[in-house]
Length: 151
Image 1: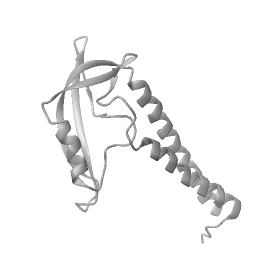
Image 2: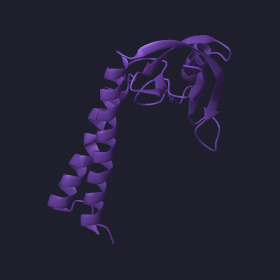
Image 3: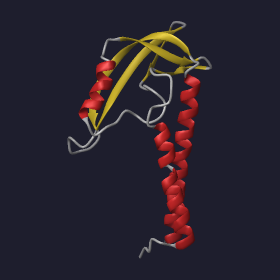
Image 4: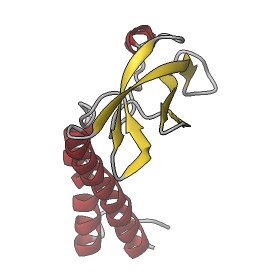
């Protein structure tokens, strides 16, 4: 069982690490994407937990049209979503992207259905990359020492 825990920690950390690296890469590339104009179609704050007041997340949807076709997206930026325990932090995002507002949309010229409102990786993505190493290191230690005794 101790081996399973070590492998599981490494696997979770590796997936988290890969997602963070992918987000950093896509965020960097998005800075060179083409621009068009879009419109915010939804801008709300949702609670992240069953018990209200334990975290919020802004939900932003937008549309943009290219070559006579309309595309929809909800990606503000690459990487970690703008989630927070503080409702005020989520409100800053929904205030910036109010429903009906015209916005710049950055879209991938190789896949115009892929877009963001903020062309970069989210602020917390680098921190996420560093923190993702913790379960990997803990998993390696678990495999070598079996510090967590289960059962």
